Length: 124
Length: 108
Image (cartoon, rainbow over all chains, first blue to last red):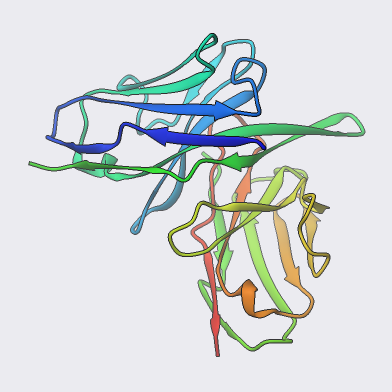
C-alpha cells in the first residue's frame, strides 16, 4: 500500500525555524514528483512546493526564499525546511505525490497520494 | 498567478439530488484541472484529473467536464457519504498549482 506520513510539526515563535519530514512507503520519493500543500481555515488549500524527479524545485511566492524542499534517497523521505516563519504560515501541512497521466500529447499532473498532515503553529 | 473561482461556496442538497459545482480559471488552462473531495479532519482525496478522467476507485456517479476556463463537477445522485467539501485545482503551470476556495455540499 502506498502511504505518506508527515511529522515534525509543532509550535514555533515568529522568526523561528522548523523542519517537516515525510516518510514514504510503497513509492520511491526520488522517482516521483513530490510536494507540499498547506491548509488553513481562512485561506483553504494552498500549494507551496514541488520537487521533480530530476531535482528541479518550485515554490509558491509566499514561501520562496524562506522554505526549502529536499529529499533523502536512502531513507526514502521528503523534507521541508521552513525558516523565518510568520503567523500566516500557521497551517496543516500535507506531503503529496504528484502523479502524471498521458493523454494524447499532454501529461496531466494530479496529487493522488496525500499524507494525514502535520500542524504547524507560528505564535509567540 | 492563475486564480480559480468555485461556485457556489455552499450547496444545500438532499440524498438523490443531482449536484453540479462550477470552477472558473482566470486564464485558459486547457484540461489541466483536477477535483478533490475533503471530509472534516481528513486529507483531500482525488476524484477527477485532466478535467474528465475518473480516478481509480472513485464511484461513477462523479463526473467532470469542461476545457479552457470553465469546468464542472457533477454528482449524478448524491449519496450520504458525498456530503463534503470539494476543491478544484489547476496544474497548467508549475508556477503554482492553485486551488479553488472550495464548495461545501451540506444537508438541506
